[in-house]
Structures are given as structure tokens and as C-alpha cells.
Image (tube, rainbow, N blue to C red; front, side, top):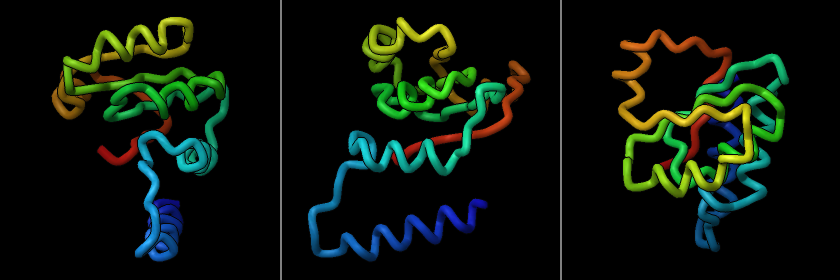
Length: 116
């Protein structure tokens, strides 16, 4: 599955060479594509590493799955919480994902992330 996604991303990069390249963190089509590729079910727990401003987080949450969004940059916390406060299936954790996963024993079915 990962090799298919990498192949698809390489195809997208090839098509966009010497053209306008969208900001994949904000581009709605790219975000929808990422969510579709993740094939999320309502019963899944999805770990998102690097939630940023929450664009991908919000799209993931619409699936109805439990979303655990980890963001390292504390300066993004208030905006992220404000943006996602109406989504009860989203848990926001601020900190280093690698350290948190080790110390908290977070369980998940899928990992989703976007480029930084």
C-alpha cells in the first residue's frame, strides 16, 4: 500500500514540474486524496502526526473515526483546538510524537500525515 502511495505521489510531482505546485497542506483536492488513500472506517483509530493547523485533521474527522492528532509546535495549539473543538472524535496532543508514542502506549489502526 505504501509503495502505491509513493508511486502516486511521484506521478503527481512529475505532472507538476515547471507548473504551479499546490501547497499540499492547504490544497483541498490533495487533502481529499490523502483521506481517500487512507481508506478510513468509522471503527478505526487514526493517528495523525503533525496536525499543524488542522486542515487534514478536520477532513479525517469527517469519516467518524477516532482521530488522535499530535502536533509538536506549541504555537499552533490554540488555533488547532479552536478549529477542531466541535469535533468530539478528535483528541489533540501537543508534544513529540516519538516520545509520546513510547511513553503513553497509544494504540491506533492507521497513521496519516501530510508534508510539513
